Image (cartoon, helix red, strand yellow):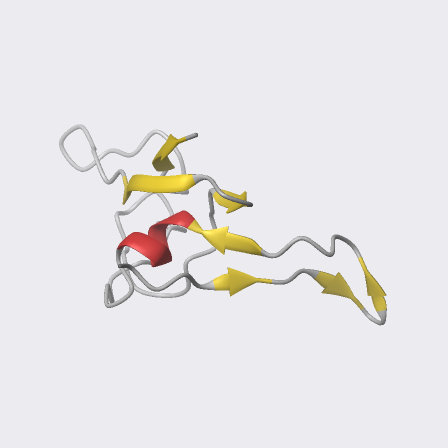
Length: 88
């Protein structure tokens, strides 16, 4: 079994959502190191992962990835897209 990594979001002392969220990518790839998603239109993979697909409850995460496609070094966004495959 893959260990789940709960994410709890809060602002100050007010809890926004009591339901724990899981980062789909970290759940599937807990040891990944090059996870930066803000690429600055240049393909950087270092830094923090700041883009997420979050799930809660009993959803099963069957896959997750950071898409780093480019066209000859040109990137359509300054962030890499993140996707997840889920099963209900």
